[in-house]
Image (cartoon, rainbow, N blue to C red; front, side, top):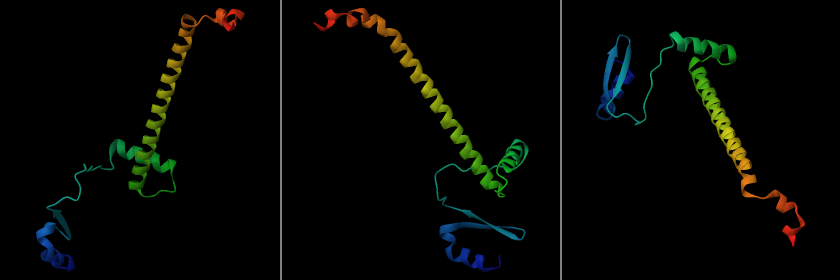
Length: 119
């Protein structure tokens, strides 16, 4: 290996890991990954390419396809949130309707409207 990065790797190789040369580019394989969170590798082909093309038409001011992918993820999250809110609203409406339907069995409206209820 040649270049400034080779010197850096030799100096700090015990912490960093192994450097591998792939033609003119060097790749550093870390021995310690800085996160335990999952990582995802996506290739801009097939259906994903179609999604990114649609996102590019939707947001023409964004030229970086990585940023378009993030926007798509954010839009998807917002759509899921709206959907959950709609389901919650429908469930709340259903519970209210059921409660209103039970009122006549629980309360005697005629008695409440009569004068004797207030004596």
